[in-house]
Amino acid sequence: MTELTQVALQVMWTRLISVVEEQAQALVRTAFSTSVREAGDLSAGVYDAHGRMLAQAVTGTPGHVNAMADAVGHFMRRIGTDTMAEGDIYITNDPWEGTGHLHDITVVTPVFHDATLIGFFACTAHIVDIGGRGFGADANSVYEEGLYIPIMRFADKGTVDRTLVRIIRGNVREPDQLVGDIYALATCNDIGKRRLAEMLAEYGLTDLGAISDFILTRSREATLARINALAPGEATGHMRIDGFDTPIDLNVRVTIERDRILSDWAGTSPVDRKGINVPLVYTKAYTCYALKCAIAPEIPNNAASLAPFEITAPEGSIVNAVHPAPVALRHVIGHMVPDTVYDALDKLLPGLVPAEGAGCLCNFQVSLRPRSDAPAPDALRAEVLTFNSGGSGARPALDGMNATAFPSGVMTMPVEATEHAGPVIIWRKELRPDSGGAGQFRGGLGQYMEVGARDGHEFDIQAMFDRVHHPARGRRGGAEGAPTTIARDDGAAMQGKGKQFVPHGHRVHMGFPGGAGYGAPQDRDTAAIHRDLAGGYISPEAAARDYGMAQAEIYDILNRAAKGEVF
Image (cartoon, rainbow, N blue to C red; front, side, top):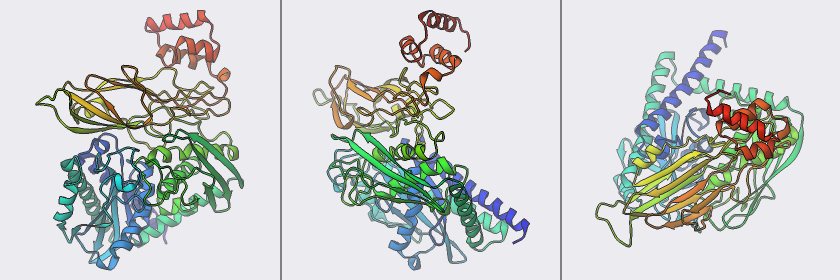
C-alpha cells in the first residue's frame, strides 16, 4: 500500500463519518417526535457487508449507537442476506436485538452496488409513544409496555408493508407522529446510500472492503496501544441507587489486561419486578462508552475500537434482563453504569475520571386529557415527552457542567418546543442554586422545573427520576450533589418513578439533582467561589458553610455583583 493510498483511505474514513453525520442531521430535520427533533435522541451508522460498524454519527447517544453496533448482525441473521434486495427497508423495536426498549425504532437499509450487497445503513430514534402502558416503569412485563415489532421488512423491494402500517397505527396513541418518524428513519438511510454511492464513484470503488479493512485495523491497533500503555490491575466499583421501590446495587469488577479490559457485573441486584431492567446490549453500550471516554476518547467509535472492551453480567441480573422482563426505563439504570465503572477505574487510574453526576436523564411524560369533573369542548388529548438533565460531576481539573446530560449526551428540550407539542405549560425552568456538590471543583447544577396544564385539562405524569434517596457521591473529598425532589403544588407527596395523577389546576414542582464535587472544598480557588456567589450558583449560606467565607466578604461580593461588576 502506497502512502498516497493510505492518505486516500484516511480521507474516505473521514468522508464516511461526514456521511453518517448528514444522515443523522436529516433525521433531526424530518422527525416528528420532539425527542428526536429537539433532544437528538437518535443514532446513525454505516456498516460493511459483514455487519461491522465502520462509522457513527457525532449527533446521537452512546446508548443507541453502541447498542445498534450489534443490531445489524441480528437483521442479517433474521432476514437472511440471500433474500435481501435493492429497495428493501427493515425495522424492529426488539429490546434485545435493537437498543434496549420498545420505544426505540431501529431501521436498517441494505446497500447494493452492481447487484452485490456491500453494506448497510442503520439508524435509531426514540419515539414518544408505542402504545401499552406508555413510557414509564409501571409494567410488570414487556408485553404490557407497548407494541412489539419483530425484525421484519418495512418495505419489500420498494413496496411498503401497508398491513404493518395499519397495525402500528391501530395500537399507538400518536399514530401520525410514529409513522412519520418511521418514514424519517427510512429517508435518512436513503440519504446515506446516495452519499455513499457518490463516494464510491469518486474513488472508483466497487465495495467497502478496502476502507473497512483500513478502518478496523487502524482502530483496533490504536485502541490496543492505549490499553497496553496502562498498568495491569483490577478493582471493583459499587453504586446504590433508588430503584423502583427498593434500592438497587450495581457492582462491577474492572480488569485491565494485555489487549483487553474486562468488566464483570457479578453481584449486581437481580431483575426488578418493574420496568427499570436493562438488556445486556444496553449495559455493554454504556460500559464501553465509559471506558472509551476515559482511555481512548479520540479514536472513532466502530466495531474494532469497541471490541477490546469485554463485558459480562449474570443472566437474570438487572443489567442482563432477559425476555419478558419489563425494560421501558432501561436508561435509568443504564445511565448509572458509567459512574459505577468510574468508581472502579478511579482506583486503577487516579486523577482521571470525574465525580458522580446526575446519571440518568430527568425525563417525564405528560398524558393530557379534558378534565373529568367539567369537560371542556376545546380540550385536547396529547402525549408530551420532555428530556431534561441534572448536573454532571466535577472533573479532576474542571467544574461539572450545569444541566448537562452525561453519559447520554441528549440535549435538554426547549420550553417552547415542549409547549408546542400539547396543552402543557412549563411555569418554571431554571438552574438550581446549591445543587452542585462543593469541592476544589464544584459539581454541575441541576434544574428546577414546574409543570402544569392549560385550563380545561388534567394529566398523568410519568416520573422517570432517580437520585431521590441516593444523590451523586463526591470524589477525593468532594461533597455530594443535591438529591432529586418532586411534589405537587398543594404539598401532596409524589414518587420518583411511576404514573401519577395531577388534577385540574395543579402543578408539579421538581428539583433535578446536582453533580458531586471533586477534591476538598477548602482547596477551591477563591476567585471561583466569588464567581459562584456573584452568579447565584451558590447561596450566601453555602458560601459560609461549605467554603468558610466570612459574612463581610459575602456582603462585599454581593454588593459588587449588584453594581454590575464582572467576576
